[in-house]
Image (cartoon, rainbow, N blue to C red; front, side):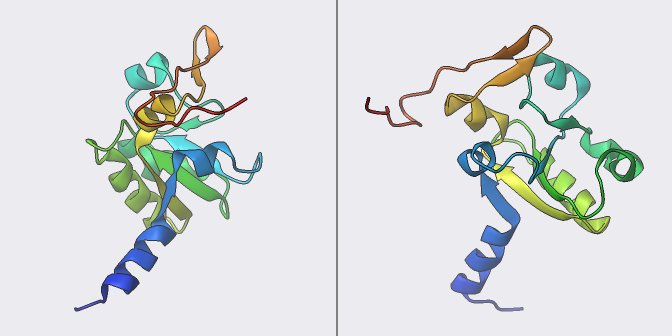
Length: 135
């Protein structure tokens, strides 16, 4: 099947979301799902995220994520395709799903907070990723 570049990128944009769009989304409009293993979740995750490791999505999604939700999945970052497998699993269950590009790595590099056992902790923005804000 041949598709045009514009059709490809239009379709790609329907399946992806960036970290700042997730961070700036209206509260309750997205169900953010961390698809990493337990030790990674324990190390730190996006505040308010639901934890469902990729392999457990078929068994746990319907129990933990209301049908009809706009789901956003993430994993480590650009070097990991775990969230792609997770997005496929949610899509096959009939959910509207997007993959958060950059994963938690770019969430942190953009200076966004992370939740740990000690509570929510701020991140330091990476100046190569996030332009400084003027005051």
